[in-house]
Figure 1 (tube, rainbow, N blue to C red):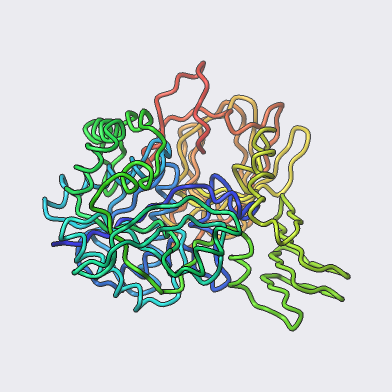
Figure 2 (figure 1 turned 180 degrees about the vertical axis):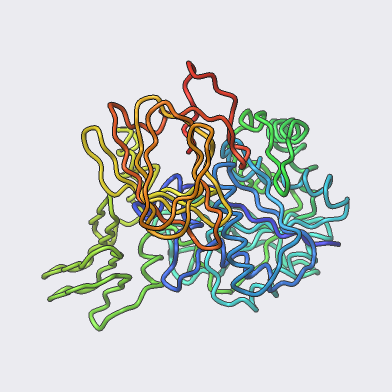
Length: 490
């Protein structure tokens, strides 16, 4: 049977705020070694050397980030990925509908006899060879008709993970699952750890597409129906398939709750491969450089005096600590987190409070990424905003117009091709142009290197929703009449 690696890339990683945001979540943040989590996941998949397709299930808002990460990883490792496919959700509804949609894709696009290897995009695995052995054992169990999960041998009495109790050993290897347990309190976690009968629930799975679909139909028919309707109404665009809106009608269920806790054919593979889901800042800090005072640091520059046992992430300015211990310090251009290191799991409560206030730091950084490149807000005030814009080679922004703001563009490096009011011309390095309010315009990079420019906006209203879109090469544009509110896409 063919094994299809399926990357599950969803969730905002709120416990890693302010580094992880809704528009730039955990799978895409850089680790101390320079790789992102989704690139590490893809690298492990490439090393499995399975030859078949690779599927990624993600939110449609993350399609271009995901595609760019896949391209960068393949280029770095000197590989091509001709069979990369993307299944795009209209909104996240947890793992059960996502995995059901993936199984429907596999049966339709890759034939009947397929085993799906579901891998979250945001996990660290230290021992690749042990991981490969576990995958092959799981695939044998899956081929025999089991719904297989990977249970990680605990290294501590951890309260932040769910647990799996092992049942009887199976002839094919692995064990039947006796039961799944939610995150326990400290005393219960200690009992589980000492017993040797419990494993951490890793969130990785391996199962035949047909077995999964039958289990969903039997145990979670509402999820199955919503995913089936979404698949039937899906639309294809190159290497991506966008699922229909019916997926949003699915109950918000994890695969554990929907199927794994109810089915009788559930098995677990006992895994020891140095697993970490990087769920909070202490786990991230464990990947950083460590000084003699046990300070874990990923910094631009630092001065630490009489300070110990801290986790520090600060890449934009000098960070100085004096006489402090057991602190978590995360500094980004627009948000600073200082917390008791022992409460890193509670960072999500800060995010919840900010979300209730509709604070923009929950959703985005000062740098926002787009399929054509990125922009960074350098400064803003009454009636003005200054951005640094980077456009990748051969890419272009949408043809657009603004009612309330004018824009000045100054090319810092590279060459810009601009379309203003029906006319096109090249703007070279150290040259500039002006776009008045109400004028249609488009910015393109015809060159082979990145285009860098400074944009100065001025006007009575500078919101990103002051935009009317006429054309867009990335399929994002909707027909919008000038009197209607425009989608917030630039």
